[in-house]
Length: 207
Image 1 (spheres, one colour):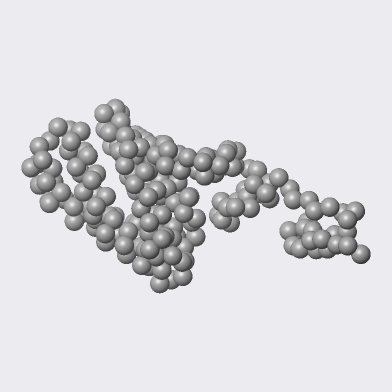
Image 2 (spheres, helix red, strand yellow):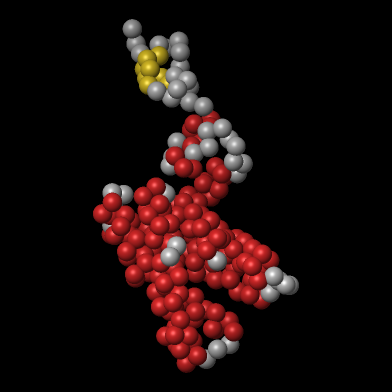
C-alpha cells in the first residue's frame, strides 16, 4: 500500500495512507523556524510571527528600530523610577537615536561576524564568543558611546578623549557584572537573528 510520512497529535512521525493526507497546523508551521524559546504554537504572542518575518526581510532596519525602542524604554524607566523628577527629553532622544543609529545596526553585523569566525554552541565556542564580546567589542562599544554623547553635547575632542580615558575601564567593569552571564545564554540558546531583541530586553534592565 502506498504510504507517506504523517504527523500525529503529538508532533511525532507516523504512517498515513493516501486517504489521510499530511496536515501541518498553521501554528506549527509558523514556529518551525524558531528556537524553542521563541516558538508560539498557541498563537498567544500577537505579532511575533510578523516581527520574525520582518527580521528576515529587513534585518538591519528592524534591529535598528528594535534598539530605538529598547533604549527608549530603558532610559524612560530609569528616569521615572530611579532618577525621579521630570523627563529629560534631550537625554531620552539622545539614547534613542544612539540605539537606532549604532546599537542595532552594529550589533547585527558584529554578531553575524562572530558566528562566522567562531561557529558552534558548545561550551568552548560559547565562552570564546563571550570573551571576544566583552574583552574586544565592549571597549569599542563604550568608546563609541562616550564619543557619541560628547559630540551631541558639543564637547571638544580633547574632552571626549579624557572621558574615554578616565571612565572606559569603570564602564567595562559595570558591563562585566551583567553581560557575561547574559551572553552565555545568548550564544548558547538564542538564534542569531533574535540576538538584538534579546539584548535589548536585557538592556532595559541594565540601563
